[in-house]
Structures are given as structure tokens and as C-alpha cells.
Amino acid sequence: MIWFQPITIEILNKRSQHTLADFLEIKFTEVGEDSLTATMPASTRSKQPLGIVHGGANVVLAETVASTAANVVVDYNNFFCVGLEINANHLRSVKEGLLTAVTKPIHLGRSTQVWQIDIYDDKGKASCVSRMTAAVLSRKGTL
Image (cartoon, rainbow, N blue to C red; front, top):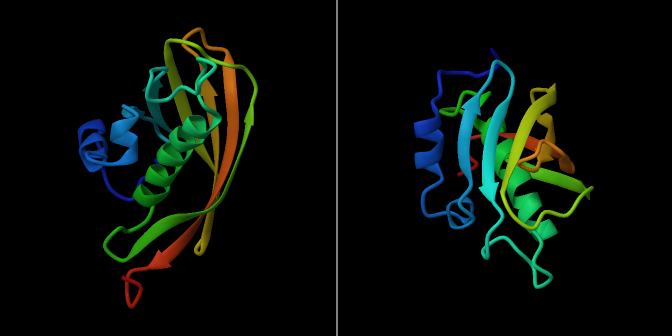
């Protein structure tokens, strides 16, 4: 298991209260051995004028799940992670249903982490693929 300390879905969802993730109704649903999963409904909050999920909403979902994962693999009392770069390829538009994002680490280093995020529609078809790089920062003198 890659997590620095035990985590639960309840703790992760509580951390997201009153944030952009909360506004978009992003919910953490599963903690795996080396993966973290979250969902987001295709709703008026996440859609663009054409009635499909906005690409930016996909990126918010991707960064939410990857940034959260990045922060729970480090000793959060001494370190924290912030996004340095994120990219996304939108593969298939989604009009309705639930999007599911699964993130897994590609690289867990002392100063950077790289996370792969795959987003699927509720039929299991790939909707978006993303990759996020996070900086690992020391809390001493940073905040």
C-alpha cells in the first residue's frame, strides 16, 4: 500500500467540503492499494452550453483525485503537494450519467510525483486521460 497513513472515503470527502470539488459534486468512492477513485455527475454544474461535460470539469475531477492522492502518500505533518502541471486528452463527450476517475502513481519521488488519471463514463468507456505532476513541498517555512 502506498498511503502514508490509513485513509477512508469519509475523511477524504469531508476534506472536500466547501471547495470546487464539493460544488461539482465530486465524491471519493474507493481507496485501493495503489489507486484512488472519485466520481462526478454530468450535471448542469459540470456541463458546457452544448450540453456535454465541460473539458475543464474533467480536469477539475482529474486534479482533485490526483492531488488528493499525492497528499496522502506523504507525511502530511511535514509535507504537502501542489499541482505543477496537468494535461488532458478528451476522448469522448459525455451528456449524462456518472464519470469515474481512477488515479495511480507513475513516479513518487522526494520532490515531485507524477500521476496518471483515467476517466470513464458510466458504461466503462474512456472519456478522458490525464497526467498530473505535483511538487512535494516542506511545511517548514513554506506556509
